[in-house]
Image (cartoon, rainbow, N blue to C red; front, side, top):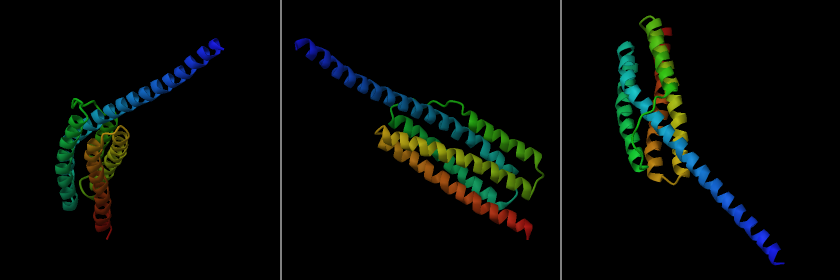
Length: 186
């Protein structure tokens, strides 16, 4: 009887121990995903601070120039919020090259170089900008969810502010598209 108790007891303990190790491992992996994503979006936002002025310079429609100028100011604030998120999460604010954003910026530069000045270039700039917004919306949405799961509610709030601004920027670009392209078609 004693030998049976000994065999069952370690098995139970081992099962709970394995479950706890799995939970700890999952938590560590999620934290790693979160940290990598934060480094990624930090690089992306800083790259956009440099890229948006080129889009403004190449745009011809005043409404588009104004929208991009306003979003540049928001992007500068978003960089600061990401830095605050790093600090609130007790992480070093380090940027890691975001290959996706680098590709989107390169595509925008190619569109601006290939399109003639005017409505078609403006339409291309808007399309490129909306691709950027959609990438940022996906990233901030995911990072906000991760921060909530990890119990970093202050961090989630900061990232959610950026998410809301990115969604608003996307909606504004859609409005500008209708106005700029429809104006030329009339």
